[in-house]
Length: 403
Image (cartoon, rainbow, N blue to C red):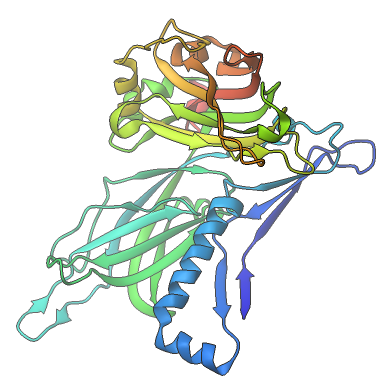
C-alpha cells in the first residue's frame, strides 16, 4: 500500500553555535494538519477498499490524529545535535500570541426544496485554527443571510502561517437526520491580517465552488508580562482568553530506583476545579539504549489558556496541603507536578507516585517576569525535577503603549 503525506513542514535550526555541528538542535513539525492519502495495493485489497470505504476512512482518521498529536503545531519533534550544549529551555520557542476570530456573516445560502416543505437553512459555523479543536457558533434560524457579529473565539497562535478553518452546517432538528454540510473554507492568519483583518471567503463543497460566502475577521493579541488582562473587563466573556500558563518539564534527576526498574513520567495538573481542571502527561522514560532512566529527559511543553471564569473559580478555592512536598502553600493551587514510576522494562511492578510539587498562582504573580525556572527536590528520596512555568497576560497593539 502507499501512504502519502502532503503539507508544509517547518524545520527550525536553533540555537546556533560557533562549533560544529553549528546548531544545538533541529526541530521539525507541520504548521497545519497535512493531507493524508492511503492507497492499498492488489486487486483484492482495492475491491475491499471500495466495498468497505469506511475502513479506509477510519485508518486515515487514526493516522491524522496521530500526526496531530506528535507533529503538528504546537507539537514538534526535537533532535539534539550536540548533547554537550543541548538545553531544551534554550531550544524552546514560545507561541506568537493569540488570535481572536469571528465569523461575522454569511450570504448566498439557498432554500432547499423538499417533498413536503421548503427548508430555509438553520446555519452555524465550526471554527478552528491548525490542529486545534473546533469551536461552534450559535445557530441562526431560518435565514439565507446569517449573522454572528457578537461571537468570537480565541486561539493560541504558534505561527502566522497556521490556517483558520471554517465549516458551515445546516442544523437539522431530528436526531436521526445529521446536519448537512454547506461548505468549508480556509485562510492563513498571515493572509487574513494582511487583508486588514477581515475578508470574505467562498465555501467549497466536495472541491466545488458553492456560491455561498462567509466573512471572517481576526484580531492579533500578544503575550505579555503585564497582567492587566487577567482582570480587565475587555477580556471577560465565555471562552475569551485573558492569559496563558506555559508549563515546561525538562528533566528529573536521581530517580531512587534500580536502573532496570525505573520507568518514570511526570503528571502535570492545573489545579482548576470542575470543568476547568486539566491534566497532562509526559512520555515515559525507561532503561533503553540512549536513555538514562535515572536522570530522564522529558523535554515537553504544555499550554493552559486562561479565561476569566477559570481564574475566578480557582481563586475561590484555597490550596489544600497534604503530606506531599509543596513548593508554595501560601495561596491558591495552580500547577501540581507528580513524578510517577510505571512498570520497568524488566517487568518489575511500578512504584507509583514518588513525590509531588505544588506551585500557586500567587507565586507566579510575584516572580520576576512571572516566570519560575528551577530544579527542586520532589518526594523524600533524593529525586529532583527541573521545570519552567510562565504566566502571561494578553495585549492588543494599542494596549502595548497604554499599559
